[in-house]
Length: 138
Image (tube, rainbow, N blue to C red; front, side):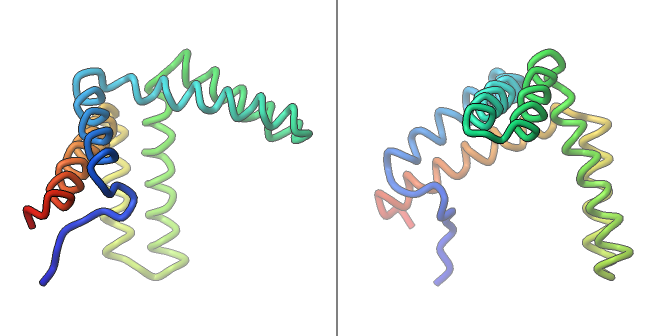
């Protein structure tokens, strides 16, 4: 019997946290970009303190850029998916997956907020699945 589940989100507490985080992201979709920006700044500072000067400066600059322009993160993901799709087509000889990846990248470039909503829905569904598995509903 096939039971849906997501190994990264498992158990009652993690299910509740994921569902609440999904609801918050759906209500405030840009909060995700700000959280990523703050995490990048913290990572940059930690890297600089740890001796990784170049990595720290780049991460710190990108974190500040994401905080100033929150949509830039979605555009970076869209561009990355388009480049990945081109690589899949030409280097990995995977035409169908490459085309699908390029189309998803273009959709994200045209509608950048769709990425935040998709992640919020993912967390919500994963949270409900984790809660349901905890209570053995399936």
